[in-house]
Image 1 (tube, rainbow, N blue to C red):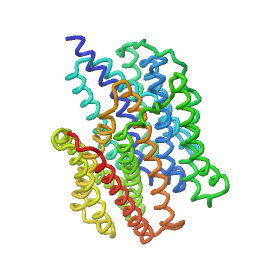
Image 2: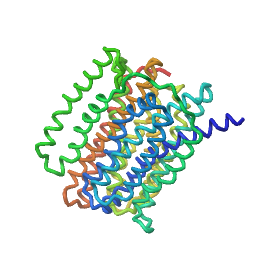
Image 3: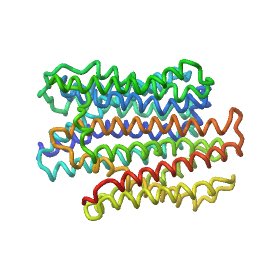
Image 4: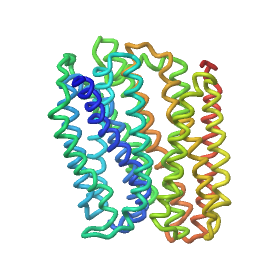
Length: 464
């Protein structure tokens, strides 16, 4: 009995990592207008607040998994948790855009180290298939709860005024949870000592970080700076750098070395198709939050708290659908995801007339955001399942890391491209009219991207 209690307690401890990582994505989305005012930032600065966290997270996710294999999962989990807590503190006390965005990169990198250890621990702690399924379900539910709680707190906290500005609390609340999780991990997590002895792929980490950085950073900064020469050169170097990274990884694989990403993954057709769907879906996900939050709060003057309540209804729709869709997919396969994409497209189209006036119909708004959440919850949790379905077991870990890296990069791309277009169309001195024009255009683009998601899903085999 004691062993069982310990095992499930350990699950809660490792789940604290995904709770913190997920909540810090959603809680920031809703607080962007307050953060922009608090640090006297620009539109590009608030795009970077999201994108740099995701960039650090995406770049070091595979690295974090490899580090756990090389240096021990407990050691890296605690290192990631302490770093995340410290980064959250630095975010909360930041005074300038540079300080905040530098801390956000650090925070994302920390998440990239601690998250893979939690996923690996589940495989180690729960050897029974039934128990493992239950553990993964609990882990996923905690991540889902974090998204809903994050959306609510991201709206409520900026409207609170204590000894510090309310927006700072969205980062500072991580401190007690981080400390408690670290202490519990020190006491209760087992030491996993089956360390991998192959040389760590430091050059692969460097090349991947550089490749993603020269794409995302100038894409966001370039618009505000008038596209100086360095941004053009940086963007033009992306594809050569990507080809260099691929060559580097293939060469290591051919010489029997352990690369950061196993290129054999991309010989599986369904994996590549699912990555196409993933790219366009996640380009929509956070750009949707960004443009809606800005229009609601800055454009239409709706309070941060009420905006949080709007998006909490979206989060509740997400959680509801994710629970239901998990039971439907074994019976109906990819059709469930296609229905979810259709719901998202229809709900997106209805957003445009709903938020085209200062007098937003609240009951319809809550219902519409709940419906959009239903669509998201039907699609998001299961795209990864389809991507990894036919991957051999020996490549499953590498495929999971590569998929998640691709996913986070796609979100950062959406923030850079769709978010950048939104701010460009809104203008340097935006009015309600220019915000709404920008909103209509970018929501229409998101609808087109969702159509592409549906197209890629149609290419997948109808397996149940």
